[in-house]
Image (tube, rainbow, N blue to C red; front, side, top):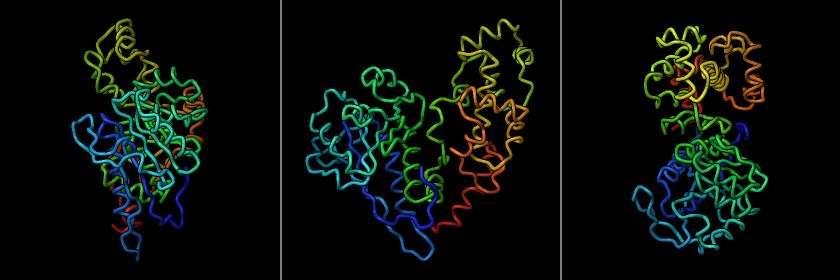
Length: 359
């Protein structure tokens, strides 16, 4: 992904959504909202408002397309659309199986190769890209429920089953639903730099950013859906990564025997207590590396690892990469943002963007 540019690209970029009937509305509205917001707020000091993205909606037959939420979207017919007229094509899958879609749609996507700068999919839109051969020998993802099917049908796709989004040589894929927003924010950042993407994230009331390499799953979400008797303990672990989280201490806190604690963890959380704790601490460390400028040693303490070496070994074993390399790959640190879990500090992040971009 490109870094901030001194002179953002001022050219208007046309973004087309290729929609199938039964598509989830958020798969369309989420990315479209990001591009529309970026277009409205791309204003530099001394420069008048400019529209940087123009959005188009295309379907195989044109006309009204009904989303899964029963809302209708007016579209233009595919036959009237020329791939070279667009900078970015985003394919949004629907209830229609890709094997039942018109052959003209797949042929149209094949024509996009080489004439469209960016081709993307959201959710099961990845199946259409795979049908067109656009994902062969490329990293890709889709919604976690559909990953197994995608792998079975298209073994040449280098599937990353729990990635939020991927980008491989101009082909982007997103996991779907809210992940479409993450994908679009990454595209805005690629086009116009970090400050504008940050401002858009603020307007959309979302975080910038969940890196594409992050998982679709997280213990922070997982603990919220677990039922008793472990739910309170899982939540407490997430909120207290630096506490004494040895299995004996956890058993005392849960008022269970060690044997019962292990049994419940395996049955409910799908892992041992030690694995759960390590995963929580890993997620805290990743977030601090992504969103703060704190020293590695401080992050090791704040995430509960205690020492740099213990954290480094965990990163190498679980992620295949060290903490410093992870930060270099994924971080967009902002001055004065000292604690990634202190939401009050978000005002400092957004303030820096406000001063850089007039809105």
